[in-house]
Image (cartoon, rainbow, N blue to C red):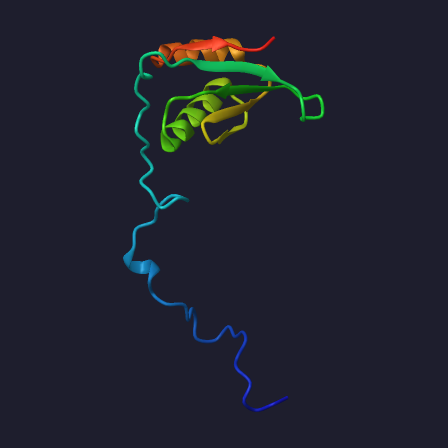
Length: 123
């Protein structure tokens, strides 16, 4: 073993990492504050489309909410509220939200209570 090798691991001496963590407050994953702004009513003339899809999902049903007239942060906040309301998993992708299972009626009533205009789309 060469004498000029560096120490790889040792339990002596404790933590050698820089002390950057001690001065900062802990934040969420994205580094932003935990409170997301509540989505307001949709602009006039915009309609959110809610449809049921099974294509490309090995026969499993998903509810897709598209044409959401909100920014990315507001769409993610709305997706979180919808997932909690329906008790399912899902994701926000761009200006659309996907929820696992068929929850079109629940989603439409929830969106209307939030002040958005929503309609069933597709078959």
